[in-house]
Image 1 (cartoon, rainbow, N blue to C red):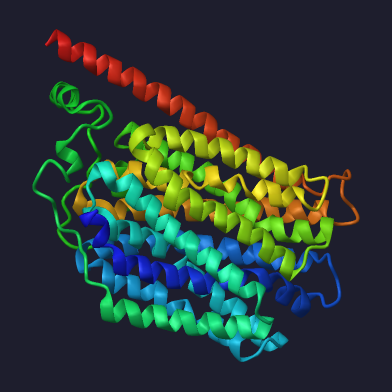
Image 2 (cartoon, helix red, strand yellow):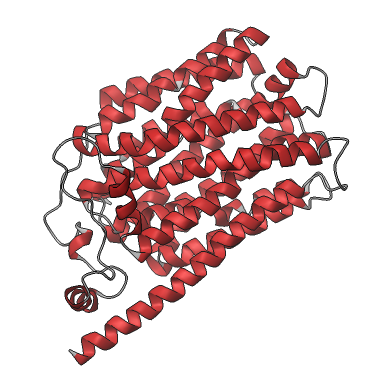
Length: 452
């Protein structure tokens, strides 16, 4: 608990940041439709604008996130955390002033820029900041951090439910400013300080088997399960080949990268299409969106603040990842085949399982790199997620617009949503194969240890 107590100020900053960010989500669909296609429930232009924004944001984050993560290893987490928290204020401030067409397009451009610096960086840097938590408690710590973010989601969504649209953006901008000020005043700095004992350096501990078995295996198989490590840097930033070597240096890292890609592809596709699909299929508006997001965020918060800290020490992050991906498949498939307005609400409850996915992946990554490489490792994973964020809108935006138009090939408005579920299903299959490969590697290491 002493490790967790040191994260208190980080939890406050994270809560305020996500509170302000998620507060505007229930309202932004109606604001976009009113600016682009006033008086209509279906609008392909709005869908394409949203998809273009997500693609450009993902492309920028793909480049920026690993660089920012690496810089945080060298100059400290606080200095780099200031960047996304501050940049996030601008788009909220624009719509807080006015929601006319001119201001909307100003918000649109500012939100793209903010997304490049905020989307992956905030999560990546918060995880890297928490690298001093011991490996056995790291999954629980990452779950708590995600739970605090989900609490911001819940609070922001609930607040938006009772505010007028104009007031929503004003309150969100004010909270974002408070988050930036709190970070600069109260958050202590944290940088890439290497640990010297076995309890906190993954290079000195077991990879996936028992410590004694892994010690023997690591000495006899130097290219097996050893944690990857970047070559020493003499100044400058790591090259793409260095990042590629980091991600492919072990089964755990390469598996985490692949699962992240497919899960993020499905997740981004779902986010791109869902609200426009629900508006066209069931006539959802701001209040229905707020109710849906409230259920989803409550399920995520319950999962990450209560369920995951209890189950992580018992089951381990590998099993939680499999369970989470299975829940994610169910979540997306139910959205796609929804036959009544209440089915999306029921589907949102499965986030109590899918919320395991990202903390489990990040914990696995954190355990497989040294303390002074946490920023670049988490940044690489965020970069892969951002790459999927580029492809997701490019694939699912035209698919969604096609099936919501009057020229759809067949009557199945949720077809694009169903396809996002298949992306998550691929990630689930890969996680199962990874689990089997790791089990076989453990058995092999145990046999070799006994023979030695």
